[in-house]
Image 1 (cartoon, helix red, strand yellow):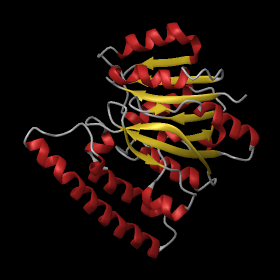
Image 2 (spheres, helix red, strand yellow; image 1 turned 90 degrees about the horizontal axis):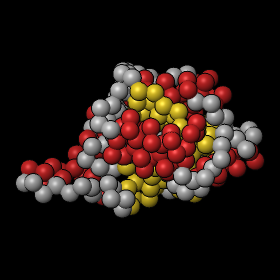
Image 3 (cartoon, helix red, strand yellow; image 1 turned 90 degrees about the vertical axis):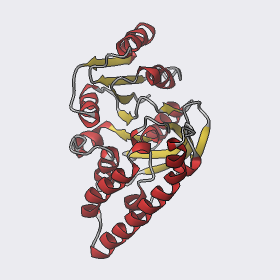
Length: 270
């Protein structure tokens, strides 16, 4: 059976970390490894990590020391990982039950597959499903425009991860998307229909709080991946549309926030 390493960057996210670890190692998948690269947390994260180590032994690998941000932490995790296949998710994300077995079986039965993605669910802090994101058939131009994969549902053979190189540390929001684009220019991914992960959507998530800046960042690095001037122009137009839509969808939430009635999450904000 293939060994799978899940990498999680962490910094003062103790309230999410226990469930994150349990979603990986609580599946009972024998050849799983969870690598947590912590940036020197002071909120109880170390206690969570020590407790997980007592329970799961060497299936948990972790370090805790200052880093330069999420990308640097993930790069540290990549150096520590010993799996044949790697995945990467945040502390507020979760793997779906049996996802590791599904992924390992697919890679074993399809040795030429270098990376894959599956469906995922967006959930609020209470675990309520906000939206189901069904895996779409792979289309490079659509992927370049929307980045429709999600960290907890993407898995890559370690040799491809090593080949594509480290995560860019100059990016704040879309470092995973940029990495996937580099991977996509080497190998075409395979699509799996099952839900492989849960993406956390809440007031403290980077994606929710910085959506407009995220779209600008994605446009800057995605333009060089376009095939020509027409595709680059299309990307710019779609970016303007997505920014306008994001602004409109967040307007009710911003109004509620001013009156102290903001909800924990809302489908309209996505």
